[in-house]
Length: 190
Image (cartoon, rainbow, N blue to C red; front, side, top):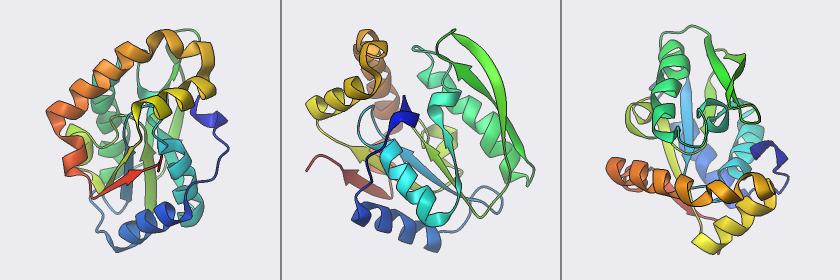
């Protein structure tokens, strides 16, 4: 899963995102949300870790919010309702964490209003969530490289779900024109 990522992000990519974030106006109360979106295996988590370290801020991972292998579209409303909406009102957000191993909701986490917040993962800048983002980043890489990374990271856990997850991503990103709406598009395989 995302927490197993240990490669450093490209410093130029981190610097570009940080520069945009520092100059952006907040759209979520006083919090400047940096939404790092893109398909599985593209390098979103790696970039998010670098941005969080540079801005000394927290991250919300969509892997916590997506309710299972068929829940990508549903996750956007969950992110907006549980995290971005409350933060925009200046109050602490509380969201439920999906337990992938048991296929059900598990613990809850909180996130307080802050100067910056990174929201990382598929769907983080889609639809209503995009309206709260001060900066929208779309991370991409070629199919084969993304699949190699995803399977190296998640192994047999992700392998049987790769194709159906990719179909959900394509539908969600296509309907939303997510890449076209990004403030910054970064390629991580070249």
